[in-house]
Image (cartoon, rainbow, N blue to C red; front, top):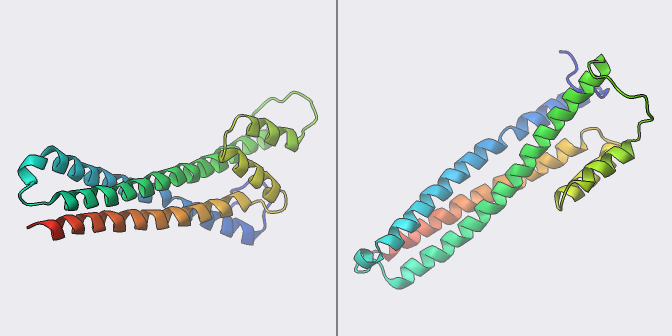
Length: 186
């Protein structure tokens, strides 16, 4: 198997890198599923609030309030999951684009101006365009990446794991909200 990364890696590092990138591809699946869960829960909440007068004989105001509060928690968890999903997607895209650019540089496909190369200036320029938390993540990646070329991917996999737990929490919270509704029917 030819080496995928233009940065010289050992065979072990190449396999680890491939596994990490493969794991990160799960992020959009979690994200789409959580989006559907939120859409269905939001639709249910909208339906209940829209039909409040006709549902009042079957659901108490307390039940509807509890459902709304628990669903608000699900929405917050879903928002945090979406935020982490965007960070993981940015890490995947950043790794792929950087790799493609470096490959073009090594192949000579890009004409360069003869000037000294300063990696710290590249990181500083990139960080100057970002807000927090991305600015912090780029700085962390640059520091850790100096000794470990896969540090960014490893950190992104940790974010993916947090995204997974947020997704599970969101789904559990929506299920609790639905159970509140079902238990509150009289």
